[in-house]
Every structure is written in C-alpha cells, then in structure tokens.
Length: 332
Length: 165
Ligand code: HEM
Ligand SMILES: [Zn+2]
Image 1 (spheres, each protein chain N blue to C red):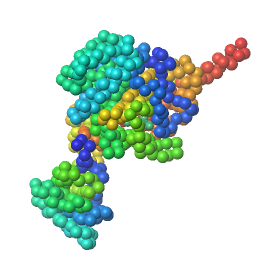
Image 2 (spheres, each protein chain N blue to C red):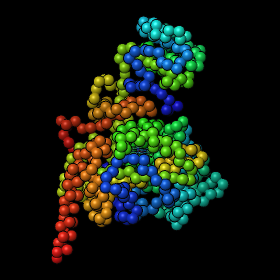
Image 3 (cartoon, rainbow over the protein chains, first blue to last red):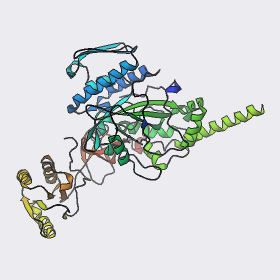
C-alpha cells in the first residue's frame, strides 16, 4: 500500500503559481491565454516529483494510468510533442536523436537513454504516452473530441486532487464535472459555457487556469483512499495548521492536438504550507481574506470543511502577531 | 463504443408509464407477452400514429423486429429489468439513440455499485445508502454513474464503531 512519505514543498517561490488575484474566490470561466506555450518545466523539485510520480505509477498502475487500446496513434502524437518541447527548452537536459523511425531520447537529469522505433509500441517498456509522461512531473489527461463533447481516453494522474484516472475513464467533460458545484458568482451553471469554450481552442494557442485546494497533512487525496484521509482532517488545530495544512495548487494547461483534435490537459501540482504564506505578505493577506469567505457548498465539495475554521484561526493569530510587531517597530 | 448509452438505475429513458413521445411518425412497441395490457394501454393513446407491436416470450428475435422498423420510429419497451437491458443494448447496437427509446420496467429495477477499493461492480439494494463490498470495504453509495465501470461510485469510509485510525 502506497505511503504518504513524500513531503515536499515549492522552494523557488517564483515558480509557485499562486492562485488568488482578488480577496474572494468564486468559480468562473477563468481560462487565460498561455504565454510560455512550452509545458516542460524544470523546478528544484523536478527529480523528487518525477520519482514520486513513477513510484505511484508502479505501485498503483490501475489507479494512476488508464487508456483505451484505440488511442495508440494519439499516444505517439503526445510523445513527439512533449519530447520536442523538452529538447527545445532545455537542450542541456534532454536530447532527441531521430534516425528515420529509430529515435533515441536522452534525459540527462535522470541519466536515462531509450532507443525505440517511432510507431512501434513493442519497442518501449510502457505504452508511448505512459513512457513519455514518466519524464515530466505533470499529470497528463487526453480528452478526445467526439460530437460536441470531450471524453477522457487516456489519463496519467498521480498528483491531481479528487481525480481518479480509473473512475473517470471514458467519461465526458460534463460527467467528470458532475460532483463540482460549478456555479458562477451570479448563479449561472458553468459546465456548458466552459465546454463550448474548450471546443473553440485552436492548435498552437494553448490556454491556462489555476485550480486550488487545501490539504490536511497529506499531499494525495483521491476517492480510492477517502477512508484514510477523511477522518484525518479533524486532527487539524489552529496550533498545527501552519505546518500541516498546505495550499495545493494545480496550474492547468489546455492544448489542442493538431492531428487527433483532442485536448491535452496538463496539470502542474505544487504545494506550500500555510506558514510559508508569510514569505510574501501579499499572498498571506489574500489567503487570509479568501479563506474567510468560502461558500459552504464549495468548502464541502473541496473536502476542506472539517479543517477550514482551524486554518482561518491560525491565519488570524499570525495576522494579529504581525500587526502587533509592526506597531511595536513603529513605536520602538 | 465505450460511450454508448446503457440502461442503468437512473437512465433518461426510464419511465413509470409508457406514453407517446412527440415528433415521431411511427411507434414500435416491444412488450413481454405476460404484460400485454401495457402494450394495449399505449396503443389506445397513440390514436392514428401507425404502430407495430412485438409481444415476446423470450427476447431472441427482437433484433429482427428492431431492424425492420423505419426511420422516425420511437421504440416503447415494457419488460422486466434483465429483458429490458438486453433489448436496450440490442437497440443501441442497431444505431438507436436514447431519444428514440422509452422503457418501462415491470417489477424491480437493478442497481450496481463500483467499489473504489477493489474496482469491482456488484448489485445492491436499490434503497441502500451504505453497503459493504465483498472485499470488506464499507462504501457510501454515491450519486454518479460510470458507463465504463458499470456502477455508481462507492466511496470508502470507516464505520464509526471501528474507530478512527
Ligand atoms: C478538459 C479537461 C478537464 C478535465 C479532464 C477536468 C477534470 C476535472 C476533475 C477530475 C475534477 C474533479 C471532479 C471530482 O471531484 O470528482 C475537476 C474539478 C473542477 N474543474 Fe475540471 N477538468 C477539465 C477542465 C476544466 C476547465 C476548462 C475548467 C474551468 C474553466 C474546470 C473547472 C473545474 C473546477 C472549478 C473544478 C472544482 C475544483 C475545486 O474546487 O477544487 N475544469 N475537473
Ligand atoms: Zn470492494
């Protein structure tokens, strides 16, 4: 059984995708044009995250990776795209040597090299999508466009919260979002609007948004382990919330694939404990005010209702201390 | 195809009472012979809409009847769960959409749960809110259904009496 040993946080704050821009948060169609369209990203935690991801894929293959047999061609399209992006952005870390259909991919960070025949899955140790995805720390989900919807046909998911590649396999965009209380500030249902927006995404013009959640002393929450993390949430107190509660952020990217017309959904998951919010006063202030104003259905859905009050109380105490210190410095 | 419609506990096609759907020029009734009054009641409501009726003892020849019908036909099915499920999937295989089908179940409906611990589907009491899976896991019966996994999601939980780990 998989353990929760992995305990890491973002150390380079400049790469942390802080989610809040205003002092309260509601669901919306918050997609923005993506500026750096290359999805490959090497952070100080790259190796740690990739190794954790591979361990999960090996320990729980059924949970973490799912695909339909008819997706092989799309899998090669994905492999080619990410390997080329890697080489393009980090030629010192990655190499791709093409000799007709004989390709060699080198990952110099992990000191790995693989030669294979493009188009022949038997020349790789895993399915092409699974193999390629194991070189990057993100989660990768391929949503295939059929009629006016998107269907999950491949998923390699090790980090995303409440996201089971196993359960969601074959579901439409609408079915996947069934559990989400997906209403906007003025009460509109967002499912149709967002799906229509995705239908309009063009190849070469990816979009991005940020999703967030709070984790109680855990980095992995999924339906498969709900019996474990469900009860643990009540162990959070205002005294331990600073260390144990982490802001968990998914920086999401959406790419239209030019050959298959599918949408590739990429998730970069990062964590920062509440106590680190103080490293950027602006983040601390936004965090404190957003958490005081979470609508009940959203808190219930996100699974944070059992420890939200303790987290807010922790932030209130820190805020009080910081304000007192500021007054003392002025007076002193 | 994995995303083809299937008959499940809350299928859009299920109805308490068969009644004519608008926008269809023809009706085809597929009814268990033992409940032929269902077919008669529907026929009485169809007025001058042309209709064909297939009363069956077993569902073996139902495919031929479905294939014979013309475009623009709405199919009305009255049967027990197992027969209805078989007729439904035959109809879908022959290219019919859920809009073209209406199903009345005679007797009990069936409901299945998908265990998120052992990844198997099993039949449950349709009224149950919490069940125990064969693998030992306690499951809360969730409201979401998967066509690929053929069951409602079963969220694992630890019952209060077993204590909190
Ligand atoms: C097309 C690819 C997408 C996939 C595969 C996907 C998948 C998911 C999944 C699996 C969940 C969790 C559902 C659960 O609780 O069982 C979720 C939640 C959610 N999704 Fe998506 N999603 C996609 C695109 C989007 C887009 C484009 C938006 C918004 C513009 C969006 C907004 C949300 C929101 C607001 C939640 C609730 C998250 C929370 O509050 O923590 N999703 N999505
Ligand atoms: Zn089970």
